[in-house]
Length: 177
Ligand code: 4NP
View 1 (cartoon, protein in one colour):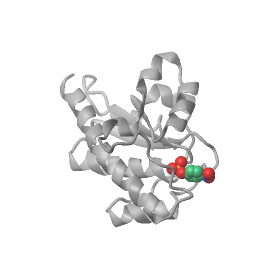
View 2: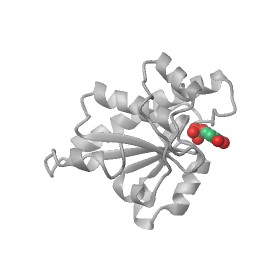
View 3: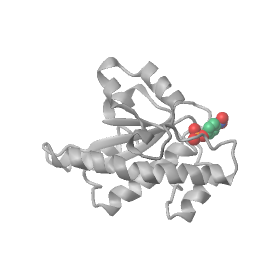
View 4: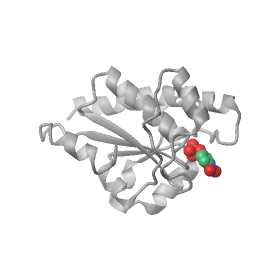
């Protein structure tokens, strides 16, 4: 899904009183953590029947892996838990993302700082850490790129926990509007 493509066409099917809420998951490379969060959140949204109201995408602050599929270790770990990352393709955050998305969710403080540096003042309130929505006791989803398989399992544990709470929060906002 692109920030300006599919999201727009879907919103045209909805009542103006029910705008789509758009979530963007962000890490550095967009090949490990954020596509994992993207896949986990996508499955949760569908499981709760919220696919006409909430959309999710992912992107990286870096440009190293643009166009690549998710890291094979991330894809395999996700597949073991029932998440299919095969359709994901890495892209870099764009200036349009700050406008198009309602919640821009960073995996760690370093990426949050980069987002803060590029985000116009009127959209700064959209920037959050994923683990703000978790009681896991840590603030950041650690970069697994240089780790072993256990790093990818930890990413999934943290992401699964926080995505459930993030979706609870977004769904409550929708019910309240
Ligand atoms: P991600 O992981 O930010 O979770 O996608 C990384 C992927 C690639 C690199 C670092 C982190 N890298 O240095 O190429």
